Amino acid sequence: MLPFIEALLPFTQINAMEEKKTLESYLDAAVEAAKRAGQIILSNFYVTKAVEHKGKVDLVTETDKACETMIFQYLESAFPSHQFIGEETSATNGTPELTDAPTWIVDPLDGTTNFVHRYPFVCVSIGLVIDKVPTVGVVFNPILDELFTAVIGKGAFLNGQRIYASEQQDIGNALLATEVGTRRDKETVDLTTNRINNLLFEVRSLRLCGSCAMNLCGVACGRLDLFYELGFGGPWDVAAGALILQEAGGHVFDPSGSQFNMMSRRVAASNKHLKQALLEGLKGFI
Image (cartoon, rainbow, N blue to C red):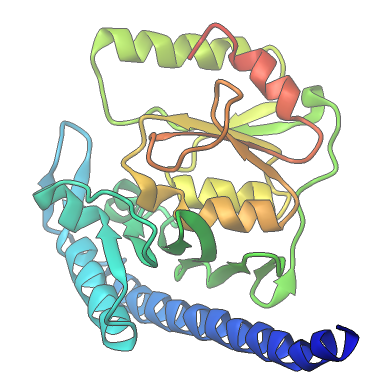
């Protein structure tokens, strides 16, 4: 029996090596696509934009559309058997069901309102999900030239340097990020402001940077300690950032405390110490 096991071992090692090469090829392609889209964003950042409204305060520009088209074409040419979910195509055709097939989930320009106002927190977000598990994540801010990357089980990186979530253990010293969303009906606004008011008694301060993906990466690299958002656009906002944060040692979960579901449009995030404190602050306000 022992010789049989020994005979199998090289094949196991070969499979592991092939899997590693495959994941690296996925990451390389996602980085290249993000950088190409980043050049489109950068070239249009300081010019006047033609703006369309998907909702009262939910904006889209020709740059969003051009970036998504370019990313999809690039990745489809490299991986023709893969599936794709994108923000702009979903806005037109509805969000496809997430299957077990390798699926690229793309936000071509997260932070469109920031982009319109020339506020530099904008990014390209590209996540690869396999068997419904986030496997590769890339978030690129071309204005600040910051590239966040992660492959499952391999750690998280900012411009090639390993990053980790903060070690802050006291919520009173924590920096919290959130967003107010795109709905402006009275019930939603009241719930949003009441939630923020409650947490402001607990944390050091609050930031609203206008990009879900950048907020997740902010927790991943220790700039932020906590983040939550309810009612964001869709899985394209979190598919990459959630993996990057988890690989940086942080927690990603539903604001109720249950397991994170990227299709639910609800997310909460913390370093490894403050999850329970954030859940306590959100209790009764979600």
